[in-house]
Length: 400
Image (tube, rainbow, N blue to C red; front, side, top):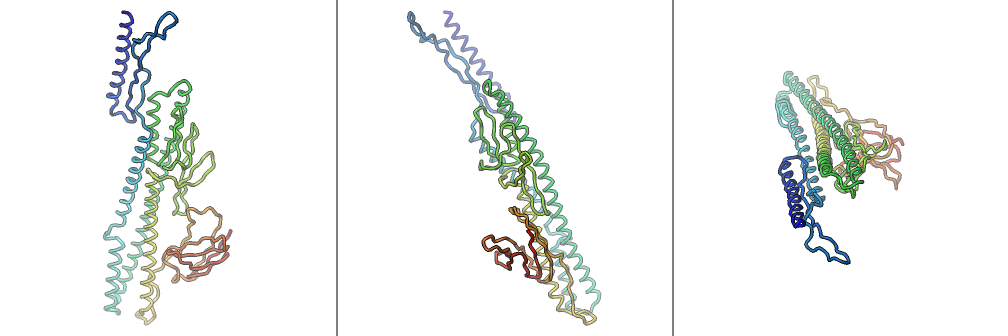
């Protein structure tokens, strides 16, 4: 009879522990990062028998052999990817809404200023001898210039704010990767004597999710459960966390145009384009949109300047002198390509502002022909040379 009581006792203890696990699940239903646990039961087999006795087929009861987490690495990866994509587009939307607010029509906007300016030019055409209409037209022209300058200034501020947000985001991301390395150390130290505690594994998954919200990542798990974290969703990006080793993410902001991610691993820095999700990618997309808008604004300013000046030069002043330019542009700027790894520099000289193109141009080196080639936005070659290029009101000398 003693064995019967032992079997019953083992059943009570095992199911009491199993029920406690269920209660723990219910108690932590709203706990962030908590994974459901499940108790694994196993039979306690009887004696194996001997020469003088047979095996006890009845058994000795039941016991809890393990308390497992409900964890699926594939589902976890998909969940992190979904959250990373949401954060990317949510961040981008927020930034684009700010851009939209800057460009919406308003009393001081470019559209209103241009409309008023062209109306005053129409008045001058009707009565060219009127000094007052000419003065008003000049003042409206200044207002147009101010509207372009103010809009450009606001877009530059929006770019600077995006860079500031990127800096804060990367600081938060680097803090999380350091925490992930610390969690890996806990997992490894526990794994030497057995499996890591479920609470530590929950912490690991929670930190990984927080990292994924800021930048897309790929995760590989060791036998002990430690996580190797690489940047990007391809699994081929630079390693951010491996064991207790951490690489730092920084940004490079050059010439007020290029915003790039830089991986700093033990002082060795390299640029990367693997950040395909999260807040980081959303900010990169927003920065690119603002920069494209600013480029379009500059091209519009050049277009208005040239068309108005060309028409104005055909007119006459009240002193019977041929008209000159009403507007002026600042010239042209040179920006290195984000993929440029060379050290060449350009000495640029403007020879005729009226001939400068209003669209972007690209200067690239043809290694086979040993020539520098200048192309317009459509890819049409404008000029070429070994070190000096002269075309369209400008002269360029390439050094290095």
